[in-house]
Length: 394
Ligand SMILES: *Cc1c(COP(=O)(O)O)cnc(C)c1O
Image 1 (tube, rainbow, N blue to C red):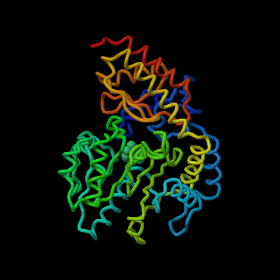
Image 2 (image 1 turned 90 degrees about the vertical axis):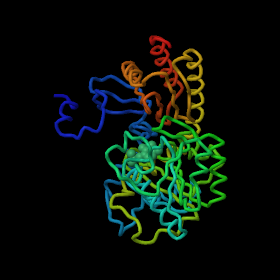
Image 3 (image 1 turned 180 degrees about the horizontal axis):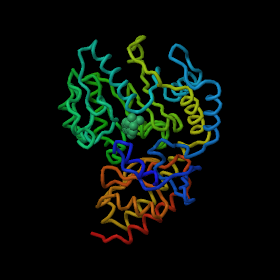
């Protein structure tokens, strides 16, 4: 029996898997057990920012594992402190809390916002349509996609979901009871959708008027992927809380929320905590990952290779105007909305040994490692071109 046949015997059936058994990874490539090599253009869904097998990360993990793998929170693990100092310095935020995952960091950010609001008679949290913030109840309460929510009701009260990029609806929803607004500046799972400039202008005006906290969910777009440390930096925005995860632990589970001076003193001992969050090995991997992103100029690479990728995709769009409806994203977070279900294209690409992802049914999403080079872009676009040219055009 192969792995997938054995899977159905023991697992709750929550994942649709590719029928591909992976042996190992190296750089931007994954190698299957039959020896075939695949170009990975979605990099563990934005987790593997350095690709596979980065030596600095592997060494950091090995060295920390030899010292200690876990301590309790009665002790401060040095890698946790090093990573905290690095992130605080890079981001300009004041304080940080480490979690195990994205969704837990979102929960922590929501708790922080509620606690800040409780002294101010504010308890409403506003989020947006098509958002993705995770799978726990708090995060799900901020999301409107029924695919993730059906059958799990009831969700948290005092959470309002407003249409994304609709400034008028947004204005109607905000009031003095609004404690926080949570936003992905470029939505990921929702289809690689950037916030529009007028929408962000409205957000800034409303924040000024009503004094709520702004939470930026940078779990997918953050830490260099869009060519800047955070996606919100593409706008003139100053979130009070920033949430990171996916690439943070270099592939190990790690998330965090950062807060500015406004919220720096809200949490007191015992007010929040976690057994595993900020695991020393994950933090050591995180330190190595962030240093590589900076020292190897990977944000700059995401920007320049991303621009090349985008212009090549624009050319493709001109060749296949009826198939490609829209091209969206920044840096190495790109999406093309096509006129049909994306799964067939994902499968056809896999047959050409290139791994891409489809989200929101019709959006082909690219989240490659930040070490991507020009040749990988050309290979990917050439494969898309050959597939699109075999499709009937509407
Ligand atoms: C993946 C993701 C999350 C959830 O992170 P998990 O680690 O899967 O809990 C939250 N927000 C965004 C924008 C994400 O992409």
